[in-house]
Image 1 (cartoon, rainbow, N blue to C red):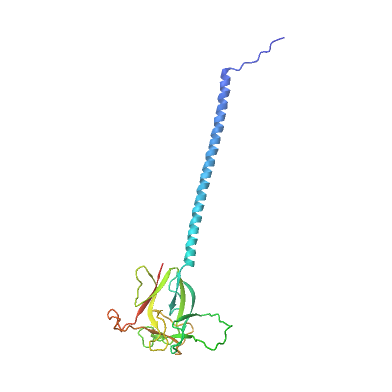
Image 2 (cartoon, rainbow, N blue to C red; image 1 turned 135 degrees about the vertical axis):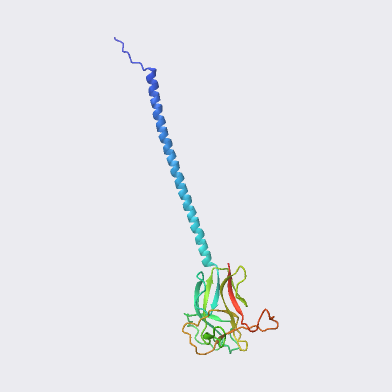
Length: 253
């Protein structure tokens, strides 16, 4: 039998093959590392997007909370002598006409009421043996150096809502104290002190107007008069019996 001789692999060929495998493995490793880097970059970008979205959502939530706080918390006041609210950030609850107990009646209520322009009447109670009447109001500004053109006209009113936490009417002032915001200023008015019926002091807007559908017919009712200080226990100066008292309605956050 003839002996078969197998070719021997040279060490050079072996090293060459080994190096070729190592190069291929290194190339594949580089590709894998690049894919890992790309994937990490994608995750980082997505994470930034998510964080940005979370930040935006938190900002929107904070704004909504602020809006809800502004709309749910606040204070109201009545603007006498006008049918609208003085500032754009006020909201009008309703407007109407000032009313109260007739000036000649010694009983009844001692405050003015702002009756809505569009009332919802009660139909269950249509009769009672003893009642209290409420009547419309009039300006009693005859011969005055301000608002005299409104004499005998009905007095409008507006209930206003502000996002402030509290409101106050300050008599004998034309400006608000530090830290308070002016809602409106005007004249201190009430029922005439010689009449049988008393009324609370209210601040009637300095730019007062007649109520809608008002007329100049003198029917009296719940009346609005200027208030003058009497010197004595009220020291003059600083007060002056020849000057009607001013007033302001102020609000505070």
